[in-house]
Length: 378
Image (cartoon, rainbow, N blue to C red):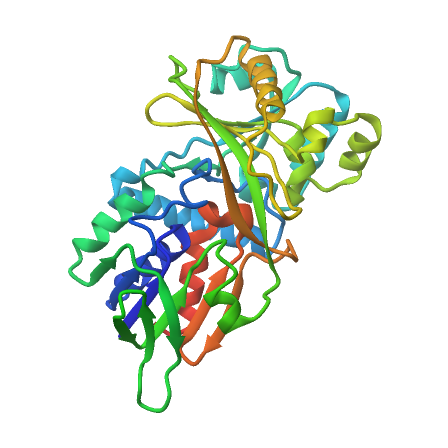
């Protein structure tokens, strides 16, 4: 079988990976020299802790298993089974962590509630003041800016993979009778195969709208930043209690009480913020993020959210942050029904559109691609 994958972000690359693993030939087409979207502009977290119970958690856990296996074969991914800590400061925040610990799937997530001293034994860099911390053992990390490059290097070594950068797909036709599915790029070349996967990320207009119509997927904008090296290990990912408000796993009466009894910081509320932080292999910290849903998106990066994140991080670390090295904005695609893990749609015979994983893309992409491969009978 020959599979054509359009889009070289993490979702597209994982579809190529599974196709090659199953013995198929892959032609991988990317409109840029390499992916430049949300697959690079994220935390690189394999984030199990906050996922909704059921399909979303099952997908994240399967993806976590796949990431670990792929990471063992491709060390350049920088896979680290580091877990995460969410420090809490008061009774209201502590109650949300305790409610999470009481979930029937808490053990599958690796939840533990640690005292402040126990949390500092796990992550000595957390020298600030907090009451306790929710630990999630199953969380992990990879290097987002280089993961696709490392996977592509391994795919090229298979001899079954061809990468065609700087080509924008202009037309897609499905299989008819004995004829194969085909895509035409802006070089005028036609590529035929037995299956086509369109993993176009947040590009939802143009070709996608033409062949799929208006799909139930929206675009979300975020702001993030990265610092110079911290100068010491940050041995886990770190979140704050605003992540309780954002992730569905924490929905509970205790969360309702937190919302009623503790107003969110005005800047965090205005920009729908949470703190997530992970250390890169070079020692720098990736820190975010904001969420903007209303179109048209701003084209500015605003300073108030960054200042808020600096305050929160420094309060946990008990020390000043290193110099901020870079700031950026990104856009990802999210199903409008946020309980859906991904939008997977057959748009032509032999042609599938896979998009809209939202903030789950880096976490869940190996399992999302595996499900596509299973459903298409690869």
